[in-house]
Image 1 (tube, rainbow, N blue to C red):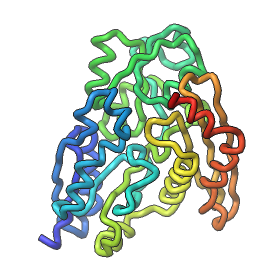
Image 2 (image 1 turned 90 degrees about the horizontal axis):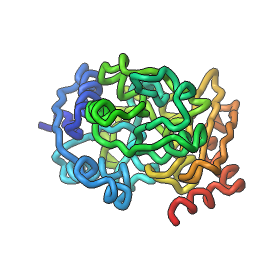
Image 3 (image 1 turned 180 degrees about the vertical axis):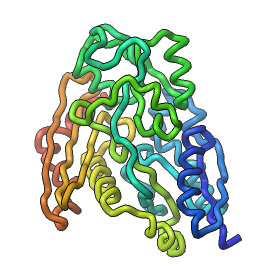
Image 4 (image 1 turned 45 degrees about the vertical axis):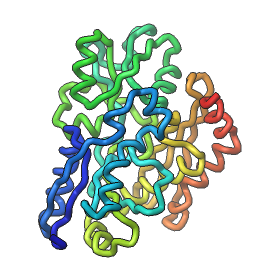
Length: 305
């Protein structure tokens, strides 16, 4: 049993597909078993979801399985993992980053810009809601939750003009044909870690660290870390209207960030370029401090009133 890596995953179609992707990577040199389970985040009402930690609820049962030693690792979309992770656990990214963009799914319109100002758009993400309101205050936002297939079905049944989803999820589920537009990260700053898969494990588990480090891609790890450092320093969580995206090219990191109030009528948006390996490790915190000086914490605080 000690030679088998037991993978904890939610039992949603996308989560299972992501666990299979990780299995494919790890099984080249290890025996792997997938153990799926339902999570609190899949069960609670939208109101309770927001009140009890947002996307952190997707981790609860998986982390319990790690603590009880029933599983060895858990697979997550990094954007669903709180920046302020419980100190009992560690995370590491695995493999390449998928497309980090948000995507417009619509049968009627090819781009966000072509949609009428009073179009009905489905999303439950505060970040996406704020950015949509930056484009048009008259957009009618419909809260829409569930897995990708459920959201696509709701769009058709409820005659919603379009929905916004992460392109990465649509790619991983082989549903690219539903994408009308890849929304540029210049216009829609992604969530921290969007498009990145990560592995969570018990801190101090040397065996897992040694195995997983072999599959880590340094540039992906660096970008993901600094995006999460930005969110952590700002004091945001998975339900905050915060976007941050980092890219590394030739030892230079460009990090772009966005913080808004939920109404979308006040926001801060900026970018920062770091041109040395030593400074890359501080980019997220540095950027966050610049945003804090410009009133980012006050903007986020107004969302809780």
